[in-house]
Length: 251
Image (cartoon, rainbow, N blue to C red):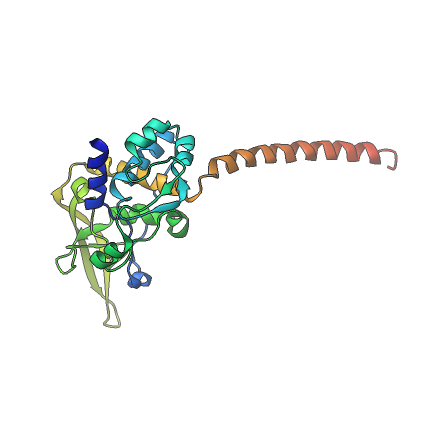
């Protein structure tokens, strides 16, 4: 029953990172650091749950398999089946979207992208600020806009958690008579189920997981790199000692 409820939930409320053709316009705001910790397994586990509950209804991650996630994040097969696999039967399957892409394109105007490599394409800071950058905009079809990605077609699916906030902009007149509008900050309009610290942790965990699935072999690569460096240092010392031994008689 819980699995069915979870599946229904992601179908109703999940949609992450929908982009529009106007992305090149940019948000003009300085990005805050996400400060993710790819070695924090607990954060990655929470991020996996966040992704499956709030993103996988509209977005796939077809370059990562459930059993890979289970192996890397210390999750048993039973935990995967009970908590993460809403629309899959076998742990070797990849994360597929729950919502039909054609239906998503009809409802939102664009088919939501696959998120497997989103963190590598956009960067963790971009995603972190995007998920925190929604503000009320009565002129938008979804009722909100985003500071990082103006004109985004993605609704604020995390509004229950964050609540709604307003963005304050100030317009300054330049010496040449032109106007420059700058972002001053957010104001909380409607409270969500989480306070700002809890929501910040929620977003950071989610971004941490997205960064992980963008490069699941990172942990192995980093550990291997350490041993390679140690080997090279050791080899350099041996080579230097050997050089001295060979050339001592020549000198």
